[in-house]
Image 1 (cartoon, each protein chain N blue to C red):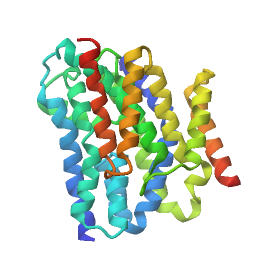
Image 2: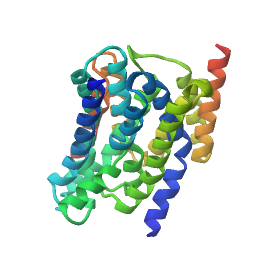
Image 3: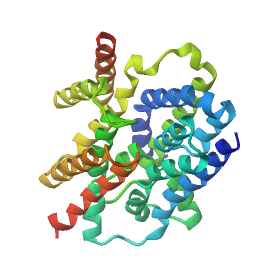
Length: 217
Length: 102
């Protein structure tokens, strides 16, 4: 239980409400399509909201397993550059590092970042644990009580995620390079969103980070 | 029903593999300074894309709905130095209000 771990837990706790809301939305929408058991199991074993929503959308609109898997994996593609960045900051055997990489989620990646390209393993795991609990609790609530809850969107809960990411983003905009990179990332996402399947815009936006090669070379 | 469980199983393995692959490729070797300056910029690049994606994303590509009002309010709150949780509550309240009155 290090200070870094506590700092991570604190960041993760501030995300419990929106993560719970996300889990509830997933549970409510998934139950009629996947069934109660598969909806709950999926949140535990896949534990990637974006990939789960993408696969669910395909299955709900009559697509097959292959199309659903491709949609989910496109959103998972962003874990590759993020994992490459994180890898050298993890320690221990390959098996242990592979298990710890499960703690990699969007918010925790940023919480764990030291800003110089290195990451804190303890902050990463500390931040992910409350989110894991909230995501799965939310899914169960959504699956079991969906019809009683009403519409999570009516409460504006879907606006909490962009607000959260904006908070993290503004913390990082410290110099000209990071501002230019963020603007470029947003631009790439905007341009690609109308033409590409879900997931592609976010992965392509990662290329904006290559500006780092020029900026400090 | 089978399609559901196949999707679930493959996505479980696939998600784990895509998270683990990146972390295992480099081992525990230190990155060189040029690579570090790129990985340091991954967070702002991905975050701004996620803000755009989660605010304007829809099944048909891009849409402007009450989430955009929520984001605008959130950015104003951030610039006014509000704490993170307050920023998120303001975004939800504004989005809910706009949705209720439109």
